[in-house]
Image (cartoon, rainbow, N blue to C red):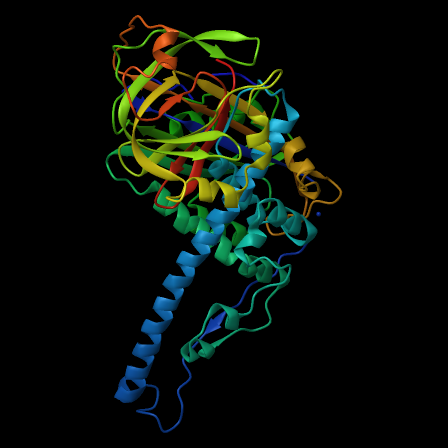
Length: 497
C-alpha cells in the first residue's frame, strides 16, 4: 500500500516534509487503583516557631540551598535523559529503516518520520503494562534511556539531595508504579518535543498529537491526565460505535489541517469500525528554505542510474558553495550537509558507484549504526570545503501499515487480542492494537522553475573546479535532522525517480 510522491527543488520557497502516524485500538478486560503521593515538610521540634517554616532562618537557608542544588540536579538529569532518549530514538530509526529496506526491493524508495513513529508509540507505551510494556520498551530502545528495567525506579535514584528525603512514598498501586518508572521517558519526550517545536522564525516545524476515544468506553483518568501532561493531547470523545465512517473522516480532517493539507487521507476506508475504541495520531509538518539557494541556470535533464542497466531522466540541481563534506573510506561513501536556514539540515550519503545488479546502497545500509552515523556526521569525518553539488529534484510520498514490521521487531503482544496488556489505559484491560498507520511526504518547491540546457559532461567533468564534487546521479540515503537536539526528523532512501 505504497505510493511514491520528498520533492527536492533548487532554491525552494518551501520544504515541506510532512508526516502523520496513527495507532488504532480495538476492544478486548483490570481494575484501576488510585495513586497517592504525599509530599510534606516535617516540622521538627525545637527548630523555629511551631508550624512556621520561616521561624528559623538557618532552616530556610538550608532549604534554599538544597532546593537550588536539587533544581540544578533535575535540570542536569533532564538534559542527560533527553540525550539518552535521542540516542534511543536514533537507534530505533535505523533499526526501523533496515526492516523497511529488507522487506522491499532494493530499488524501492523509502521515506518515513522516525520522530513521529516514536512519539505515537510512546503514547501507546504510556498505557501499556507487563510484558506488553517490556516489548515496546525494547523495540523503541527505551532501555537505552536507563529507566525501564521492568520494575519501577526508586525515589532515591531520582534525587541526590537530603531535602528530597522528606518526600514520603506510600504503597503505590502497580499501574502507577509502572507510569512512574517510565516517567522520565515521557517527560523527556515532552522536553524534546518542546525543543524541536521551538520556532526560530527561519523555518516552520510543528508536531501535534491527538487522542480520539470512543465516547462509551471507560478510559482511565490517570492515562488521560498523563497524555495531556506529557504529549499535550486533549482527549476527544467520538462515536465509533454508531458513526465509524464519519469519525474516520473527522480524524483525517484533523491530520490534514495539522499537515497543511499534505496528508488528507491517513486513515483508509474501513480502517475503523464498531470495534475501534481509541485512535492515537501524531502529525509532523516542516517547511524551510535552503540556506544557500541552488542555481537555476544549469538545470537540465540528466540520466539517473537506478542500477547498472536501468536509467531514468531527472532534472538536476546545481550548487557551488562552501559546505560540510566527508568521506567514509572503508565504505566508499560521500557525506554532504545541505543546511536549511535555521537549525535544520539535510544530510546525503552517496556511494561512489553501483555494481552489477546493485544500487550501491546495500553495504551502507547493512553497516549503518548509531555509533557509526554519529561518527560520520562529526567533525572527525566532515569538514567545510568548496563543493560542486548535483542532486536531482525529487518528490516522495510513502504510506505504511506497521503491524507486520513492529511485530517482527519484537512488539507482538501489543497486537495480540489474547496477550495485549493496556490496563494502564482501560480499567477493563480490553484493548489491543489492531494496526499502526504511517504516511510521510516531503516536498521542496522553488519559486518559479527555469529549465536550462545541460549535458552529462557537466556532471562528470571538473569544469575548472579544484574542490570535491558531489554528483547524486545514482541511489543515495538522506535524512533531515534538527541539529540542536540531533533528532532525525525524516529518513529515506532515494533509489528511483
